[in-house]
Length: 184
Image (cartoon, rainbow, N blue to C red; front, side, top):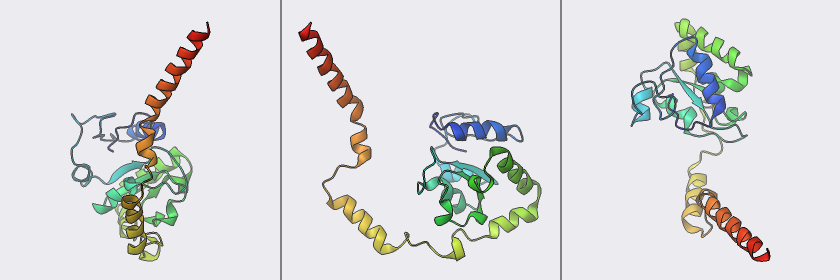
């Protein structure tokens, strides 16, 4: 796995549980056990059977690169995140935590695949997408419209404004304390 976020508790707990079966190499900044953070995630994961592909949190529709990066290098993602990942990908092509519902069952599936080359080959032969077709959201027109909206709108992205919140709150708190001290 490659992880830098120490607050992703589900991923961290799973890492420790799975490590009881077999060492899980961690090439990120957090829980690093390979001697330093990797600079190229794809290069790092390409020689592994499995990659822990846990999102930072679980929200319907929130699916990031974590699930498809291992697919690029024919490695099996062990995915936790969106309970609706099946709308984007064929869940028979990876280990989907939501198909099992608990860590122990997922670990048992990983052990089964690890010890059974035929089961591993069957999983790897599955297409990534349902019926081997891109879903409705991966259409050139929609992607073009999405990027056009990003580059032509004057609305500030939520992520850009979120970084300012600590400064805004700090100023408001300082202002509040200044007003309070004047009254006393």
